[in-house]
Image 1 (cartoon, rainbow, N blue to C red):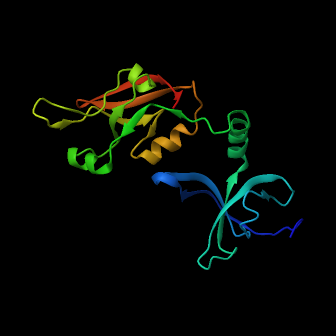
Image 2 (cartoon, rainbow, N blue to C red):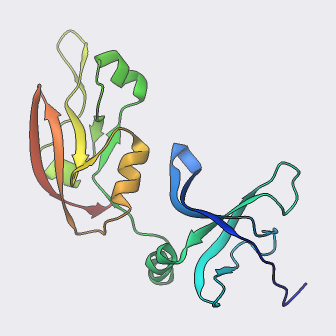
Image 3 (tube, rainbow, N blue to C red):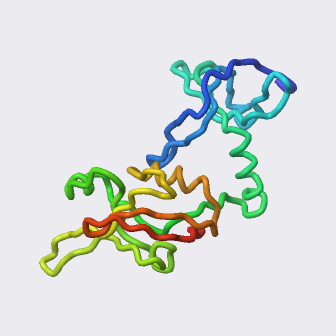
Length: 194
């Protein structure tokens, strides 16, 4: 089946699909083009022959190549491929924090933001003095800081923080808005590779 081509219609942009570890993959192109096991990774072209994406996955009820297909946009490819060539992996910026589960948010009555569960030493979050959860002398848990926003973008889940940080590079500075002891605070933080 060398040198074959299939056609299809792009039915939506900016779709979210489930990824690994409860993280959603944002910005996908939805298409009805056939995506076979052999052509995943193949180009998605517009009618002018311009690369607009890379065919990646298909959801099919029958297990065939027909169904709802998704492609990674070319802008994402342009950002990621140089990293793969240079480092053999993608380089993601991070804060260096662990995030508490939603049940902990519910337990403490936190409606907005994400609770910092722990902070890695030598991380950007540690360097600016952010605080994670802890225990008092009686062994009761207490919360430290609750991240509310990154550069004005609301953060309410791990998926939110992952998606927002995906727009930045290691070494870039962000403004983090957080809640500590009932007071809203802001801090500038330089993202690092984690």
